[in-house]
Image 1: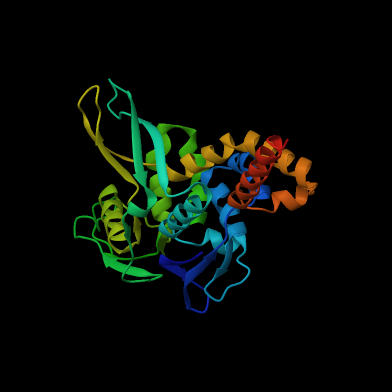
Image 2 (image 1 turned 135 degrees about the horizontal axis):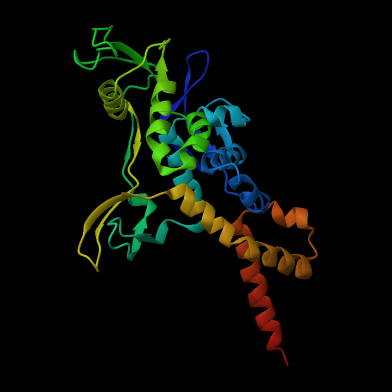
Length: 291
């Protein structure tokens, strides 16, 4: 599959790369999902994409170091395409009502092809803005330089803040502040006020590509209207983990009947394994009715 990133990767020479050749997961990558998951979703996604991206613009092969530098939205977009190639376009899942006094299970059903994708108009990779007069004040209430230069968050940023974000909910704000400050260029020792960080976040959101993975609905039990983010990496990785036992059975089934090696079977993507299994099942069914 060849796709066009909504953002893009700018290399050290300033050249923008957007077209990606994406191959499906093979059995050997599926088998390593539990191992990669121990390092967090962002790190696991880096490992998966570095094995499935065959080409990024003129870059071939694409090492993990480059995959880490892809924008967050571009990685989400590639994950959508990869999930489509693995399990199909339709997503059926269960979430919890976000209302604290309810928490009822809610079934959701949507198609990945309907997820809104917004391409960034300004590809950066560096952006400039000016803070408002009040936001530019320092901790002594003195006016400072309102100019701010920033870049957009990448997979590497997500990997680095993941341990802090995972400690406790109370650290979510600190993790978010760390993410923003990592993206601000030539910051030096300057500390930004919450208002300044809010304005920077707003401008980042305005210029960044977007993958709108938000679920809107209403809880049938409490009637609460909600709009909650859908964690596609977590959902996809759990799908793959649940299929570990099935993967081993597929390898056994094909090895037993075709006498292929485990290495040969694990080099196949899920769809190809399934097609051989369907052909084999039809053949065995036909042979069972002979005589």
